[in-house]
Length: 124
Image (cartoon, rainbow, N blue to C red; front, side, top):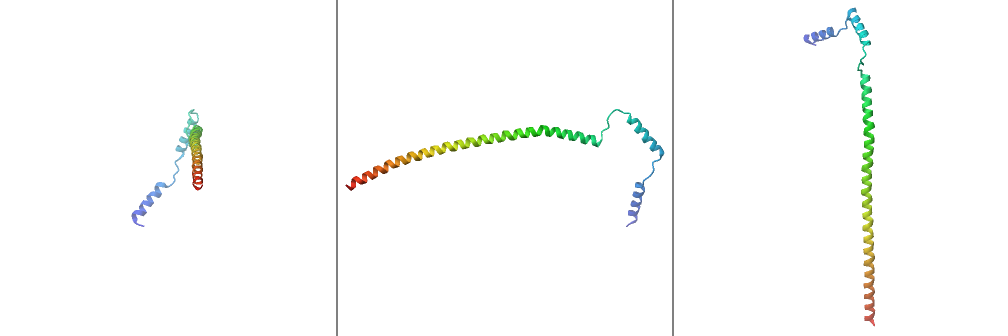
């Protein structure tokens, strides 16, 4: 350790050494506490600030949660309606395809019967 380091360390120890402030300081603090005790205005403490913050946070959540729930219900309802429309459209398409297949089958049966009848007549 160099001479400068020792000197800095010595100065730090001297500056940070505990000293008795004396009786005058003690009496001044006690007198100040007595006069402030009669003061009616509230003193803001960490506990009071924390309590106020908790109340503000609680108020925020009392407003935000119902709003979020309403939003979720609205979005969910809209999605459900869209899905219901999609299913209805699919059902209508299914009915149309089945009708087209039934008509095609009937027409093919008529054509098949005509072809078979024509083949039978040719054999005679």
